[in-house]
Length: 494
Ligand SMILES: Cc1ncc(COP(=O)(O)O)c(C=O)c1O
Image (cartoon, rainbow, N blue to C red; front, side, top):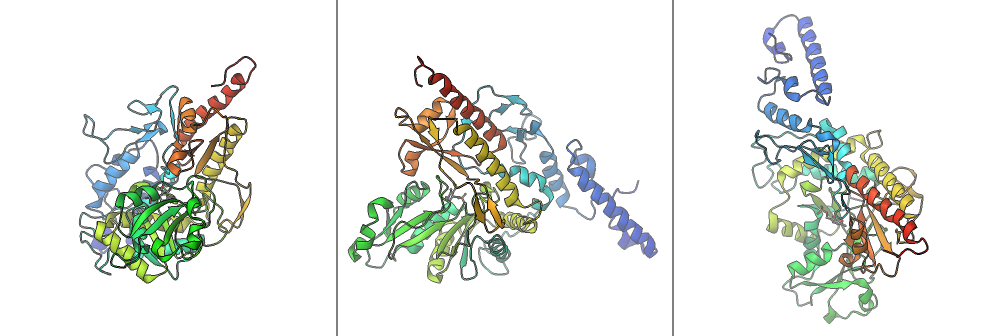
């Protein structure tokens, strides 16, 4: 029998050109059909490609890996889980379904009754359905000998020149950062760059100057405090919330040391666009993890001296551990690069290759019907609307206030709010511990204490999967509905 796809044969036969053309048309058509069928939920990829690999279309070593990747991706897990290539192997030697929270059973079809909603982590799984829809564009295949070296051969560096170019293109196309006069430094997640940048902006170890104080305006992302105190460098120390320094910074004398202020915009946890709290000669690190059109309107491109970005929030690939800094000053950039080199010798080359595919796929679809930011904004806006509809009935909890329509230069129109987090305040006097109050209602959140904002506040993540969000809405609805009965005459408040 003829192989289903005989692409290689055109070269060998030397028959009439018409026959060759026919073979090409046949091959292309079969390949197209195979691709369409590959996305059909009920057809297994092994059937498509044939177990013997006879339908290889010129591929040899990549076929088996492609088969395995498609085989696991094709398992549905009832729409409430998925199989991963590196999942724990079952008795049959194959990885099984890993179920979303509140679902169980071998195929994730069983709903756990009265399940607790976990809205703690900022895990950006809301974008998983986007990549499932763009499976072909985001798939990466690479050989066992891909970039085994510590450095890339073309530039003898730890950073892929092409990935850097694509990241610059993405910022320019989205209009969220000015890149032309900036150096780009890669790292294993932007979390690694927190300390790299503190180090890079601190006085030289050999300099006589006193250590810099690292500060942030509360409520702030707790990793700034955790990282700074953990590494405990001689050139810097954690200085706490900016409130205690707002006057001191202006009066600071040389023996007090300077300040390094973290400004997160949009802020984690309250999602507000922010400016520095301290003035004067304070060095500022702008963390723009969420400065992308699915989370906020983009009033203008950010153009600060030191900026932090991550792939985790715009594309959702938090597990790839990839972030970058945009730095204007060459000396600061070199110090940050040296930090990354000395600690991990650059971000993983495998990750960089995967990120190249992801960034290219994002770029290729901008402003089309497959725009990742339009998709992301739609999901997050819908979640915020639903959350507001429930919480607006409550007198017990309230949410941060966001203007209903703000002009976005990316979408070229006003857009509705779509924040990554809800910053919840417990309004009742007895709910001093807001996280505890929500936990009693089976909702796990992150206490305001982490963000140095006090226990009356707590953060709800809106970034997780659809299943997570649905369970969250169920528990919140129960909580708010219960108020009706508690408020009734003769009933006792929870
Ligand atoms: C404000 C902010 N900065 C940085 C990070 C770290 O991101 P990455 O996954 O790149 O380490 C996060 C993660 O949640 C964040 O919220």
